[in-house]
Image (cartoon, rainbow, N blue to C red; front, side, top):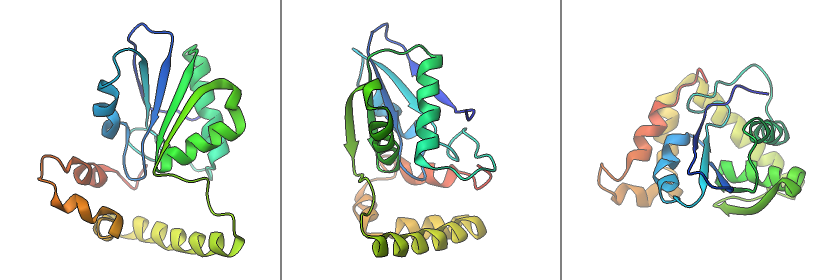
Length: 177
């Protein structure tokens, strides 16, 4: 099992909602959401390579990450567990659903998909992701600047600086993780 960083907000309830963040983020980006839940425990997890969950020298796949999350659930003796996954965290949630559906009561998937079914589209996306990974490793600041120029994030530019805290969080991620 990886040495995951996580925060358990125990409200003394029987149910727990696991909250999984998106790419270039960490559990801090989900704290505001977690505070909305006072009638259920929440478990925020830094996924591998983000926040304070260091990436070790292995090739992660969603099944490995999902298995590690189940081990966290077991180590905390959690019962009646639900999962919320945003974007990349949603992909992890899909893996939890595919491999451990009997362990969970409900799934909420936001801005995510199970992946591409057509081989040629998957191969093209792999090439894009490999180029992005290379850019991320060689010039992190430039990668973040380019990432924030993607059409998906254009509406965030309309937010005031205080509301747009996620940009600051992206820049606090470290390529060392």
